[in-house]
Amino acid sequence: LAMNNTKKIIKNTIVITLLGLIFSVFLSLTFNKSYPIIEKNKIDYKKNLLVQILGDTPYDNDLINSFITIEPNKLLNNKKGSNAYIAKYNNQTEAVIIESIAPDGYSGEISLLTAISDDEKIISVRIIDHKETPGLGDYIDQNKSLWVNNFIGMNFNAKQDSSWRVKKDQGDFDFKAGATISPRAVINAVKNTLIFYQENKEKFI
Image 1 (cartoon, rainbow, N blue to C red):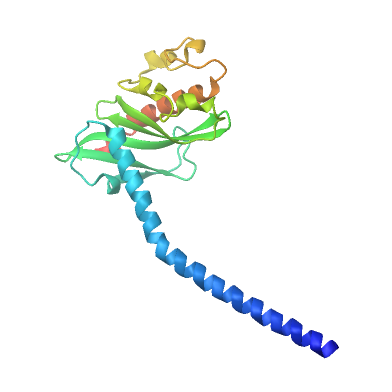
Image 2: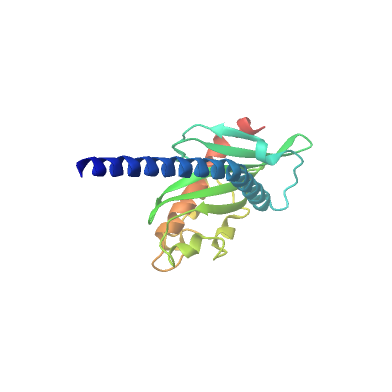
């Protein structure tokens, strides 16, 4: 009886092992086949987003491959480093698209892209990831609100610092009652991105 049980255990172990190997091979083949498609979709999405955020800004370079990597920086809060994409026309820099993080959202970090023209004005801002509470976070989400359009055309100098606040804090930006934390975080992140660009403009020439 003990011998029979041992044989059954060995047999079951072999079957389970074989099934595990077959499943692993299947997963590997599926991943290898789908990975290039997934990566292409990511690149296509990024390209479309970069073109969208540039609006009517002219460019004739390969935008998705025209970038510099920015080391972790306190102004951008990019703890792992990030990319800044450079739009050029006739070999002249027309705009820069900078990735940054607002670390102080209501429910965590808010990731955004800010497009800045060569004359240091905001072209547009896009929120690319956030975990804000549904309803409260809708105010900053361009898919649900036009609020981020308030940044278009803005620039920054020290004299204008007080205007880079929500109206509740005596600034220029609208806000939704009960939802001031998310707008404050985004406003501060965009302002700091502009400051970063001003301080490092020579890198994007």
